[in-house]
Image 1 (cartoon, rainbow, N blue to C red):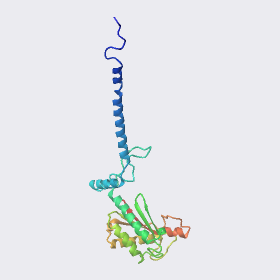
Image 2 (image 1 turned 90 degrees about the horizontal axis):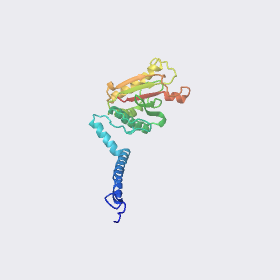
Image 3 (image 1 turned 180 degrees about the vertical axis):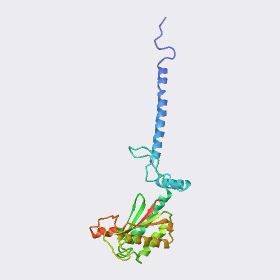
Image 4 (image 1 turned 45 degrees about the horizontal axis):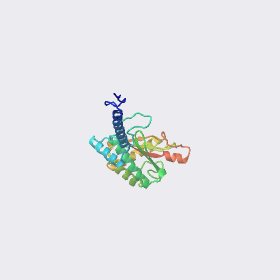
Length: 243
């Protein structure tokens, strides 16, 4: 009787091994599909439409009682090497202070030279500094000049639209003053701040929102050793607080 060739019977031949060996492609294709979906998700998180983001953030702020849920200046995912955390919640009053300071900066830019004012952000709020010389007061005086009224009227109109506290602070250089009205720079700086605050009240700003302070020459922003430095130190600061 002729012997059967080895491997020619049953289902254990080459055909069966080939079919079983193709099953790994199913697992491989599933893995590739999942990876593709994962990278699409990451790409969608990294790409943000600015206008849609701003509209969504505004809607969320209004829905949650005037608070910003996401700050456009903060990273949502986090910087490299830092832990992922939520963006800080910014009170609505802080946003109002920022918007008001930007409007006042534009008013000052249209009315004064760039070296006559400054607008900066501080921990307390937004600080608007206006040099007093030739703008607000005559030398050694605390009465507002008539030329100052139009400028202060425009600033008051912006401040009336918000309810933040406003600090009006007077500053002088270190040149002593000895007059009957102002025995020292303390009285002069405080009187100048009071004149500006009084004018704001006349323009309709509530007195309960205003705080005045006189610092004389104790908080210079430049050296008092030069005329230019002393001129920069003679100023009125208007601080729009974040609360």
